[in-house]
Image 1 (cartoon, helix red, strand yellow):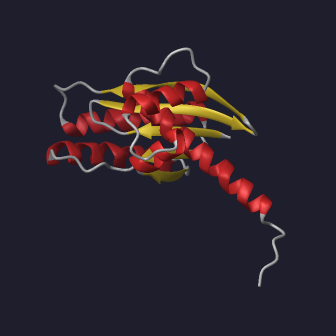
Image 2 (cartoon, helix red, strand yellow):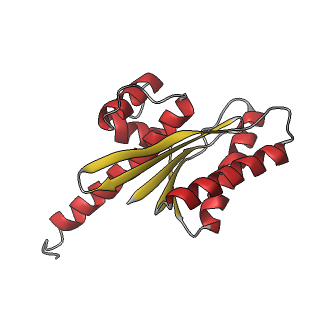
Length: 171
């Protein structure tokens, strides 16, 4: 199964693509879609949309995992991140790819085991779990890999629970 993780942003929108088969998880690709600050918001959003469409056409993910919006003190930042999140979700929907949303707390819990983990702890665990030599850079790409890994872990957990309790007698 190919999973695409997305850490939305207007200047840098992170992506991470994982291939998961059984116990094996491999990094296929990661990086950022970068937009130039001199462009209008509409042009930047189109660039993000086009970038995600291109990635989805190239890697054919079966699911997209995206980080939910973290409420920021800066309303303008929250709005532009929400817009970038929306175009990433639209790109997935236009390709008929199911979108799964995870809060930062859920991602940290799935990766580190502690929902209040620090950013460097999450990034180091991403490096360890994916057997990478270095922490993925930039941070937005590492965060996108964390979101994708969160989704993979949830799928495996749900599969395990379904198999374990499939024949469990019900009242």
